[in-house]
Length: 487
Image (cartoon, rainbow, N blue to C red; front, side, top):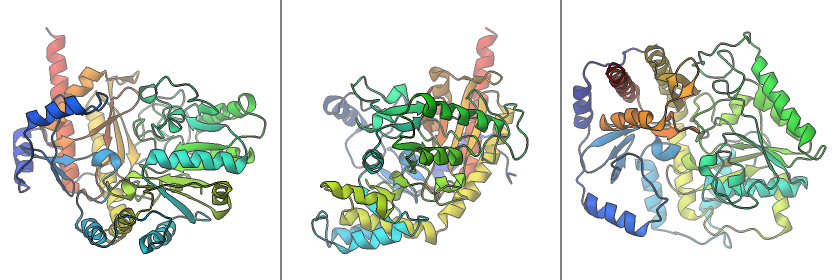
């Protein structure tokens, strides 16, 4: 239970208190107007920014970001990428030391950091997951995992979930089942099938007994403690794909985020992933866990999100939090599977370069030394329980879900029907939160989910402030709606 309740009575003092907590760093860059002009003139027009008046961020520290005028509590972590805190001193020091010795060689030569880091990273993985290939991003990691699975199995077809996000490269865009992120390009869906998403909140089946989270949906279901009928029904739908849409006994792989990130922090029905992995393997395929957002202790109970599903995948992909903002990623698998890459040359110029490996090792050290997985569980559960209270208080909050510091808050127009809150109304609340000094992400197919995935160094004090701001902003939104309905 919360030791302090969200405070709705003093929003201005909350805002002032937040500003006073931090020494404000001077901004020495170009003026805001000039940056806006340069952005419009020289960046491609698809590069868009959050908020009606985009922020010009110039410094970060811990869970704080700074623009020209004030500080913000960063509850999105650079899209779930800043794992141990902005500009963490130990990570900074490791990078600075490496900068003075060796920047780059590529893997045509050996350098010590690559091998030290590979050994250190794979000790975090169970079973035979002991061979690593380093890349530069999550899209690259999933790209490579697709190729490995097809080469190893000799099969072509790959399954992912509707509502999944696995990247935006031409190869991974087919895995990503969000119309928002897909261009009309030929061949995207070649050999890729999208299974029904086993979502207990907005899916066809599911309810208050169906997901592994400290907070359950309020949706009614007839599942009993220890069983999930909804999971059985979704699994039957997966079986239909194998019966009707695949060559018999021939699938290359199935991809699954352990908790869907861009899709709005969606968790699956209990037991589904384990059964799905068994079905895929029985049909000659590999099971691939996308840990780009859910890895490195973020879910609290486990170091990797897949451990919460009681499985050991055949391939694990990772990025984002692996480097605390440094561009890096990795694919980890068994020696037997990895050997297929020896059929031809495969090369990544920057993957596993000395700078990235130095940063990666420092990140692993900080997670362990500062017990950030434990903090994710403690602060995340505290935050989830506080959000549960706000869900019960405000009609605009339909669902609260997640584990550790991977949290989603779904905003709705109608709690009974679960109709999503439309974009203009969502933006009203979201902008108010920003004005109060808290930055949240935005996700879900309808962009109506507050994505709460802060650096894993956030405190209960930070959580209290975030809760108070959500509470106040939802209250102000509901008041505004009532005033509008009486006119």
